[in-house]
Length: 192
Image (cartoon, rainbow, N blue to C red; front, side, top):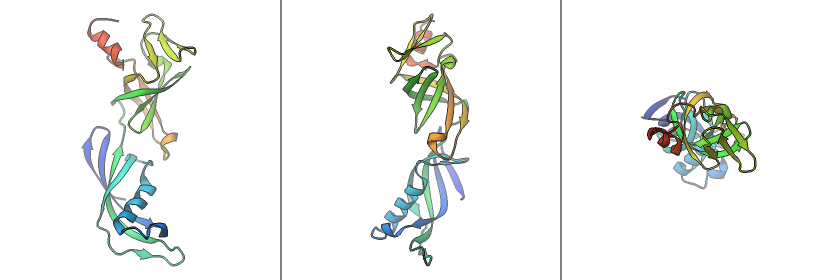
């Protein structure tokens, strides 16, 4: 499956070519609609090695007559199409939102994927998880990290699997000017 990259950051527009199977349930649609629906069922939400997470499929083109294989009932078409892809990069900074906390760390959503920040990577201060408030609290700084907080973190490990839910991305917020916005605003002003 050949492809070409355009873009920067973690989002890319990728041109791909494939033979797509159009099931009979789509035969009542126009050929373009049938192709895009089939491509979206096949690709969206999946992780492709060396590409990343397929967000959406757009602009199907260069398709012509299809082939029907006896006994299958579906039509097969060669097609060129574009995909919007999300590909996290090691050491990249990400802005995200805390979506869940556990006693061992926090989960941060950025783009279509979640990353994990171990409690030892939340801040330079030792933090404790307070079950009552559902938040992490710094022992010395008394800084609080809770659900829905917006944070800036750095990607320190990536393990993308075929299924997005099985993928793992580890983050850190211990470096200068990372963490909750209020924390690095305090640091800029000379706070701890």
